[in-house]
Structure formats: structure tokens, C-alpha cells
Image (cartoon, rainbow, N blue to C red):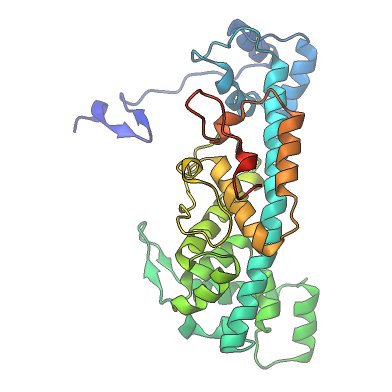
Length: 328
């Protein structure tokens, strides 16, 4: 295929060019936004936000206000961009709170279920993990060894966790602490990799059943949790992102779920919020995710929430997600 016909990452590749755009001063950034039709009532006030947020980061929130690229719709103001930016920030905080609760619950279930199958030091049992393999990039993946290295690093740290220090001061056999200590050292990403690396389906099944899922679905959802957690931790845009890591569709739920019309778009934020709610209903039945999401939307009535992936009705209006069985 000729070079100029290649299709890369969603863009048609027309040949390499040299990047020549110069950096713009804050005044030039303001002038550029105004030239594109954005109303900026107070340029000094706007400059202060550009100093703290950056033009490039804020420009990502301009897209829903541009029917034509680089031209703002009539009546769009700088405040509209700021409100959308703030909405996205609050959405990330709401999701991070839910992920924190789920991380604790996943960790607790893994420790409990596997300790009662293999004993207190199941983390040290190499045989319960899949053998090392080479991924698509050619990298060798050895989750068992990765976990052992992490634990050993903590044991050797100058300032280890208090419970690690306590174990080390009393016990020398086994060298590693029991699972209810050592697994506390793992992040949600490491927990996800460990769950996926369990060799026996039965080991994953008991953990997944707590959340009302098939273990294959939980593998996918934990992967998506890790992906979104990293987006939030890096303060990246979430509200209208097309997810690179999509949680599997849940076709056979064990508890109230969303109807078929609502579950086709699993690469957007709304479907991910549904997976959070489903998991939280098992881990924290009294959760306030719906209330938090409703308040966020009520406080920001002008935000174009359809970009979150909430399906539309034939007349163009959004389906009332609150009446779905999962959220009702």
C-alpha cells in the first residue's frame, strides 16, 4: 500500500510533515480563541485559567461547542468550557471514590477465597498461577514473579509499611508475610493482573460470584477499572472519551442490570458507570453512586451529557437512565 494511503489510528496518513507551530503567549491564545468565535468577557480572568490549566488541555473541551472544526457555535463562552472542565473533574472524583471502594472489596475477596483454598501464604504458591508467557509486544509476563519482587522490595525498604515492619521483627519463616498483609501492597492494576493470572477457573469463579459475574467478565471489568483509574489519576478527560479498554458486555446478569437498548455502547463513560454500579451493589449495597451522579448532572444542566454515551431515543432525546433496573 502506498504510504499516503495508509490509515493510522483513525486518521488518513498523507505523508510526514515538519511540525512548525510556535508556542503562543497567553495573549495570543486568547486572541486565537476569540478569532474562532469564542466569547471571552474578561480576558484577564481567562488568562489566569490558561496559566493553571493550559490551552491544550482546555481545548479538548471545546469540541462539543464546534459544529464546524475550529469555529465555535454562536453564543459559546469561555465559561462554557470551564464549566465542562469542572464537570469532568467532578466526574473523575466520583469515579475514583467508587474505584477505591471496589479495590478494597476485590482485595478482600481474593485474600479470603484463596487463603481458604491454599492457606495463609497462597501468594507464594507458584503453582496456582499461570506460567510465564510472551505477550503481543514480545515482553515476557510473569505475574507470580512480579508479585514476589514487589513483596521483596517492600520487605527491603527503609521505611516499610507498619505491618510489614512488625512481621519482619517477629517472624523469619516464611520470609514473606501472609496474604492478608502482602496483598495489601498491591494496586488495583496488580490485583487485576493477579486475578487474570490465576490458573484454575475455580479460583477465579468464587471471587467473581461474590460480584454476581462470570469470571471471564470480571477479568475484563477489572482491566477496565485499572484503565479508567489511570485516566483519573492523570487528570485526563473522561466525560467524552472513547475507551481504548472496553469492559465486556454483561449478557447474563445475576442482579438488576440495564436493558438491551442501553448496553450496546460499551466504549463510553456511561457503560463504565453501569459496571461500577453493578460491582458496588455487591461490595457496598448502600452506595450513593446514583445520588452522586444525579447531583452532578443537576448541578450542571447545560453540560452535553450525551457525549458520555447515554443512548438516545428515536426522537433524539436521551433515555432516562435513572429508570433502568440497575439504577432504579
